[in-house]
Amino acid sequence: MIARDIGEVILKVEEISLAFGGVQALSNISFDVREHEVRAIIGPNGAGKSSMLNVINGVYHPQKGSVTFKGEKRTQMDPHKVASQGVARTFQNIALFKGMSVLDNLMTGRTLMMKANLFQQAFYWGAAQREEIKHRERVEEIIDFLEIQSIRKTPVGRLPYGLQKRVELGRALAAEPTLLLLDEPMAGMNVEEKQDMCRFVLDVNEEFGTTIVLIEHDMGVVMDISDRVVVLDYGKKIGDGSPDEVRNNQAVIDAYLGVAH
Image 1: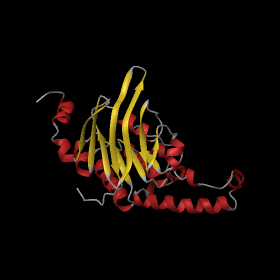
Image 2 (image 1 turned 90 degrees about the vertical axis):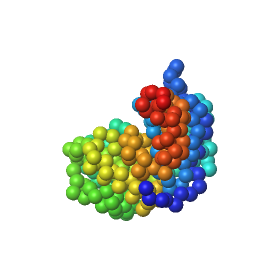
Image 3 (image 1 turned 180 degrees about the vertical axis):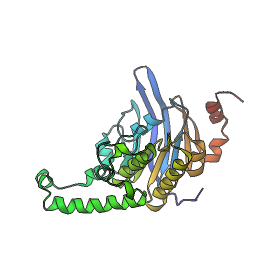
């Protein structure tokens, strides 16, 4: 794995507990994420990984604990506010506008940066026109970066699954995030598609300096591209450290194999 210039802590999760009725999704989870690193969250199905991402980006409000991002501590915040602070994400189930083109889907990622008023936007006039040209230029750069020039005008619903995943990554990048949350970006992909996505994730981290929190089931991928790994099992943290430390953690081995050694 390529050594990265890892910075100070940018995100701190402290004693997060989240329950839905009688179901305890997360129990006293604490970990941090450092600037410019790739931080993986792993665990068996039902471990609470996606719930943790939903807490970080404000979709879920935990009953206990706090999230500190860029020095600002919060117990509750809505996703719009979190996005405006520089957090973007992709989803386990693709959440794109299937009838819209790749280009238009990526343009939706620029929404928070658009300042023109409704009148100007309706008539594509003045500031709205200048603003759209600027945003289109940035989106075209992302299209080139992700090597999807040939499908830029294609409706997303017509694309194969692997390319839709790449488009969703592009839409998240269009928001120019400081912190990028990726919820199983390689789920359902074949070997070649996974290799491509790994390359893009590393390029985003290295070329853009984006901090990445990644949920992934493929342990080969996790061990290859992650700087540090936190392991959840039934809503509890059972491991945290470098890929090698986690790989050799007996509690992690037991959780994945379902046996004691």
